[in-house]
Image 1 (cartoon, helix red, strand yellow):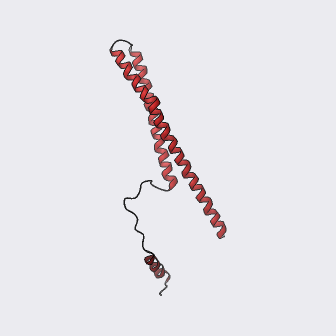
Image 2 (tube, rainbow, N blue to C red):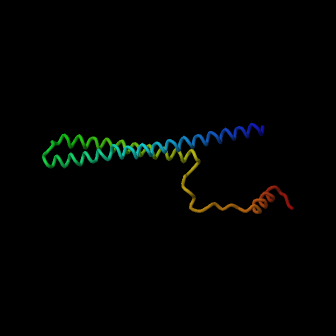
Image 3 (tube, rainbow, N blue to C red):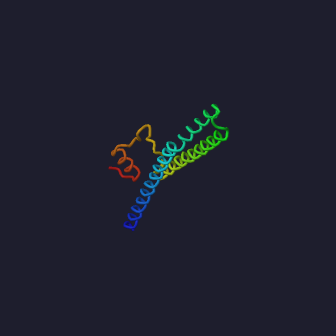
Length: 129
């Protein structure tokens, strides 16, 4: 029975580690996707909107060009928000996988000395030495 319990413990440990690694990988992918999209799509969409607005104010293009540029920028911002949501959800999944917050406790936990633990154990079992 002890052997079976040890095997169960090892399997549970392996599953927990695999789950945490998968959650970390998902978070890393979400971070890269968000950053890449912001650099390659959102930034240029904002720039195109700015340029089309300036061109419209100078009378070079009509309002349709400005509206299309605004539409592309808004779609890019929506997609960026979706990527941010994906990041947040991936972070939560990682925290769940590791069993709690990834933040360090502000104060280290107080660990009783070995003598205190032995004394409490002896008191609880009725052992008096």
